[in-house]
Figure 1 (cartoon, rainbow, N blue to C red):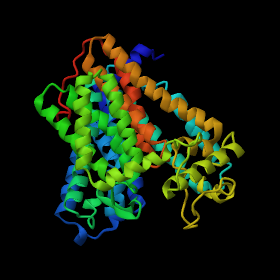
Figure 2: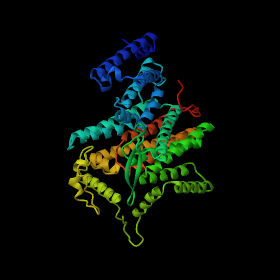
Figure 3: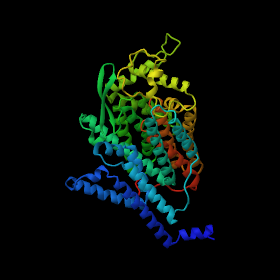
Figure 4: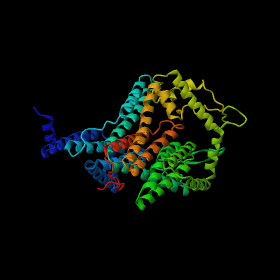
Amino acid sequence: MLTTGAATSWLRGDGARRGLACVAAALAAVCAGYYLSGGPRWLAAGLDAVGPLHVLALAAGVLCLLLILRRPEAGLVLLAAVLYTNLSEVAVRSYGVPSLLQLLAAAVVAGWALRKLSGDEVRPGMVFDPLLFPAVAYCAVVLLSTLVARDAALADERLAEHLKGLAVFLIVTNLTTTRASLRRVVWALVLSGAFLGAVSVVQVLTRSYGSEFGGFGRVKLAQIVGGVREPRIAGPLSDPNFYAQILVALVPLALYRAWDERRAVLKALGVLALALIGGALVFTYSRGGAVAAGLVLALAALDKKVRLRLVLPAVALVVLLLLWAPAEFGGRLETLERLLPDEDEEAVTVHAESSFEQRKLLMGTAWEMFDAHPVVGVGAGNYSEHFDEFSAHVGSATPSYENFAERRYPHNLYLEVAAETGTLGLVAFLLTVGGALLSALVAARHFRNKGDPGAASLASSVALALAGYLASSLFLHGHYIQHLWLLVALAAAARNVSRAEPAGASYEKPPIPSL
């Protein structure tokens, strides 16, 4: 009979490693053959359509694959950058190539599995973070809601998005196992934000609104304030408000890198990234993004215990930046005053402003759906399918029934979850994101108790990034939900690292893994 010790000894043997590598290679070949048998579009291109750039891209892809199989942590850094820049969707939309995110995720999982099977990993087995339970429960509720959905295809689409996010969660929590790896992923996100911000700032300064800059410079012509219509920067996403949302989450990450890095080059890089991210955020003209960014900066000042003599110059700097910003940006922020109570009235009055009134209608309709279907909701992704049915109960002070064929969204992530998945989904979702926020805060406390303020600050920046995203979600629904899953995974990974690594363990390493 083969004992556990004998099995472990066999797995660590050179012959066993070669055998397992052969099995893995055979499985990879079968998967590749199955994929190619489907005749993907890029394979159907004639030889005359293949140029030097295609050959160069193929060679780069092979090199990346070899690197990821040997160093899956490098693949994790690439995965975080590809996800946050929306590169995969950009490549599909603009160039018709296969999903880079799925290919990259498969390569990272393969590299991680090979390491586990080879016996080189110090800690065997998978990491099943406690947050996995509410996350899986939420996905299960989304699956359950497909049974009551009026449009099953929309529900299945939403389920697929969350399952991909769950896969991202598993990958990140299993590969982010040290302070160094956590820091590398954070730097990958900061540099991704710097890249997106640079594209946006150059696009605005050069007034190159007719070019999409390879898919990373999308623009939406929209109302700014009153009758003024100006281009709003959307980056690689479909809407400026969602672009602002993912930028807000990067503000504390870049700020803390500029604050805490010891090397002058990295500190300067953090400052530059913060400036580019902030500049791009301004040109989205997103009021919700501005409010969330202000909240994040205030929380950062409290976390760092910034003294009043430093707060005043910082406020003065912000005022100067606002004066430098386009006049339309200040005018757009001034419209937020319309949400404040009128001095002559006891009740809160919202003045007639079309976007505010429309959002009141959209949010109120979501509440009506939840009230009518409190257990599992109307079905994931099916808010728009029931909009006309429930919006009549809400009413609106402005005409809001134009473009009848256009899909409607509740403009509030929490109301969307409640309307579409009911109380079961809302509870599971809040446990997931609330647990993630608590995980990052617990990680910061553990690092401080271990005498590692640098790692504690890193964990705090992750908590603030998640807080910024969740705050902006008060004004936005759940598009691009994989960005939230990535932040949730980083928070969980930070807590795991804070418990696993000994006190005083060094994490001062380059942000990009060496080859």
